Length: 165
Image 1 (spheres, rainbow, N blue to C red):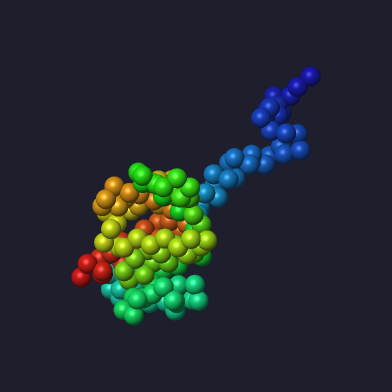
Image 2 (cartoon, rainbow, N blue to C red):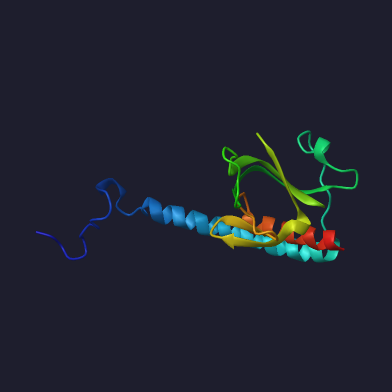
């Protein structure tokens, strides 16, 4: 005999009665991370409008690759980049990983291979879920998996604006 209101939710395992299922916890974590990223992006927009971007110290990986008048303005130490372009040579990897450096002139991925995009080559940077998609003027593209993609989008936009003049 069952009492009214005491029926167990059949979707929950008996030892997790009262706990949120993992999918709900994961969704809540993703939403919280996205909200924190958006708040950081908003703060950066406000700061960059009044003070610009402060240069960062170049580490040993990017230092030798910088031109004399080039400065690092943002870094993502762990990034994945998936290139989208026609005519990739057979055997040329489309997906790369490494440190991603935003400089005053370009975006540089330093990993097993080094890949560089001039800021003037970037037509647009848009968010798709938690990935940042870069559209290049020549039709190429790249999908970036980075920490704080919303903030990184603001950093790219700011660096592009300063590079243009």
